[in-house]
Image (cartoon, rainbow over all chains, first blue to last red; front, side):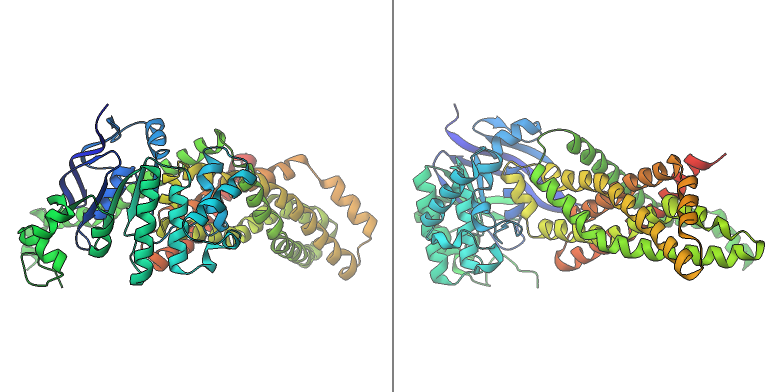
Length: 254
Length: 272
C-alpha cells in the first residue's frame, strides 16, 4: 500500500491555447495537510478540480490510494468521491434544501441513512462547527457568509471523508471569522485523521493549516516545503508572494 | 480592374475566404449539435436506469402539471372560443354552420391544445428549469453534487425529463376538454346553437386518432421543453448574464422545436 494518499504526476491542462497546468507534480501523505498557494489565475482551482474528476486533464497521472483515477470508469470515480469531501469557495450550498438537508445530503443519498437519524447527525456536525441547532431548518440564503462557510464545512465532513479539499476557505471573510474557519478546518481534519488539500492565497490561513506548502506558478509547482522552510527560503517567487510585494520576478498583468 | 478581380478570384483567395467564413459557424453548429445529442443520450439513459429520485419526480410533476393548469386552461378556452367564432364567420356563407362542433373538436384536440400547452409550458417551465440549473452550474452546486457522489443527470435532469413526458399529455387532455367547452360556450350562448345537438355533434365527431395525436405531440413537446431547459441551464457559464442567456435560449429553442415537431408529427400521422 502506498504511503501517499494523493499522487499527481506531470499533470497538464489547457483551455484552448491557454495552458493552465504545465506538468504539475504533487505528493500528499496520509493525514498530511498540503496547502497550494499561488496568485489568482495560476490554476489552483483547476488543479483541485482535476484531482476530483470535475475536469479531465489533457495528460498526466492522478492516483488516490495508489489507484489511477485519470480516465477511470465511473464506478472507480464514485468510489473515490465517497472518500472525499469538499469545501467550495462560495459554499455551493443547495438553495432548494434546508441547512440540515445540505449537511446530511451525502448521508441520505449515498450512505442511505434514515432522514430522522441523518437530521440528528447533521445537527451534531453543525454544533461541531459552532452552529446552533435552530439553524438546521433555515434556508442557506438566510445565513451570513461566515455561517454558510461553516455549513459547507459541516457538509464536507459529515460523511467522515478520508480526503478533504478546501477551495479558498477564507476568501470573503473578515480576519476573525477567517481564523475561526482555519481553526475549524484544523479540528475537523485532525479529528477525522483526514488528508487535506487546500488552495488559497491567504498566507495567514496557509501558515496556520499547512503541514506543507507548495507554490504554483505558471502551471508548475516551483517550490515545496514546510511552513518553517517557507519563512527561511530565498526563492524570489515565494518571497515576493508571501510578502505581498509588487516588486520581484512575478509580474502582474494589469 | 475586372481582370485583377478575376485573377484574385481565380487565385483562390475568394473561395478560401468564403469557406473560412462558412466553416467557423458550421463547425460551431456541428459541435453544438453533437454536444446536444450526447446530452440527450445521457439524459435518456439516466432517466430509464436506477436509482430513481421519486420525490424529486413528484415535485417536478406538480411544478409542471398542477401549477401550469391555469395558464393552459386560459389559453385553450380562448382558443376554442376563437375557433368557434371564426368557423361560424367563415362557414356561414356556405351554409355549413353545423360543422362548427367538428372543426372545434379537430382543431383543439389535434393542434391548439398540444401546441398552445407546449408553448405556454415552455415559457413557464423551460425558463424556470434553465434558470435553476444554470444558477446551480455557476454557483458550483452541480460540482458539489458530483463531489457528494451524486450523478447530476439522475438528480437534476432525469426527474424533469420524466415529469415533462408524463405530465404534458395530462395537461393537453385537460386542455382538450376546456378548449371544446370554450367552443360550446360561443356556439350555444352567442351563436344560438342547440346545446344537445352541439354535444351530440362533438361526441359523434370524436375519433381516437384526434386524442392520440394530441397525446403523442404532448409527449414529444414535454421531452423537448425539459431537455432544452436542462441543456441550456447545464452548459451556462459566466454568472448572471450566462444564466439569463440560458433562460432565453431554452424558451426560444423549445418554442421553435415544438412548432417544427408539430409539423413533422402531423405529416407522419396524417399525410396520405
